[in-house]
Each structure stands twice: as structure tokens, then as C-alpha cells.
Length: 102
Image (cartoon, rainbow, N blue to C red; front, top):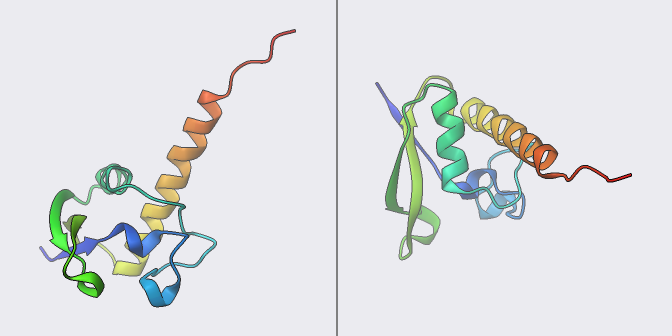
């Protein structure tokens, strides 16, 4: 099966399109971690693995990326990953809120 590489830059809200972001600002995530991408890909049954690679636009610096099976187009996969991460963060934020005392 074919594989795709997903860099956090692809879905980072703080990056512009010219800096490597591939999804719209509406879907983008603020500072996504490799672990969040890994977990989302795992939930989407894409068999992810974390690897150390050099990002092509900054090839001197080696960073972590997630390599996974290609089930859909790369853009559709990135959108699905963004939606999963947003779900995780919403649940985490909801559960971390403390109950107001009366």
C-alpha cells in the first residue's frame, strides 16, 4: 500500500500557505503535535508510525513526521486528521473544566 508523510506544518494554523500549510484556516489546528496526528491517524485506521525526517522546505533541520497508509487523497486525509484533533481537544477542554462550586 502507498504511504504518505504528514508534517505538523501541513495543519498548523500559525503557518501560511507559502510556509507549507495545506488546509484552510478554518480547519487548521494551533500548534499540532506529532502525537496528536499519530493518535488521529490511528483512529482513522491508517497504521501510522512516527519517523525522524528532514522537512523538504527546511532540509537541514531534522524533525518528526508521521508516515501512514494512503487511504484517501492527501488533502482529504489531512482534513480528517484535523477534525479528529479538534474533537480530542474539545473533549479534553470539556473534561478539564472544573465544576463551579455553589
